[in-house]
Image 1: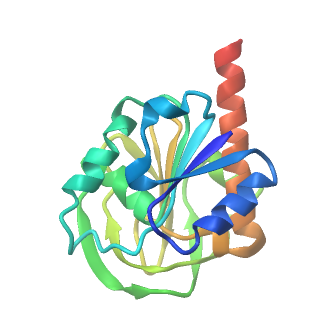
Image 2: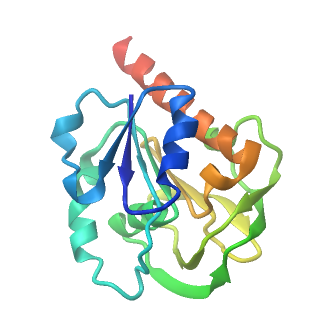
Length: 192
């Protein structure tokens, strides 16, 4: 089962419906989420949010994501979730021009999230902010609009994507399916 942490995005039900094709899901509102209540989870997806991290006090959000620092199971952050993952590990945020359309994203590093996909893919964006790449992360994808389109942790199964796979057609669905496989493989590796 994968827990989808709903940060208030209207797209969260789409994440749930795609992931549910491969694995059971549980959607939990961000400020109701408590890590210890989900010991049965195989992984976590953090949704987007109608929040500008450069304009709000991010402290309450970062406090709510403290658990990630000690997490071992796979985590996927999407848009706001990606930004929170970055900030949790020391990234810096910045404003940029609005990007609310299809964007050509180039995969620049080997990453299991992009298995079975070409090196350049069209993906849907919906943001006007970005984060830098924290020191413990590998930069995995870039676009003309945003440097940090995707990243992954060097040692833990943590992934962040600035784009929205849940509204990016087949390619986006493959990315979410790949995350399900990452969760299954992690689970298998722990039970051996």
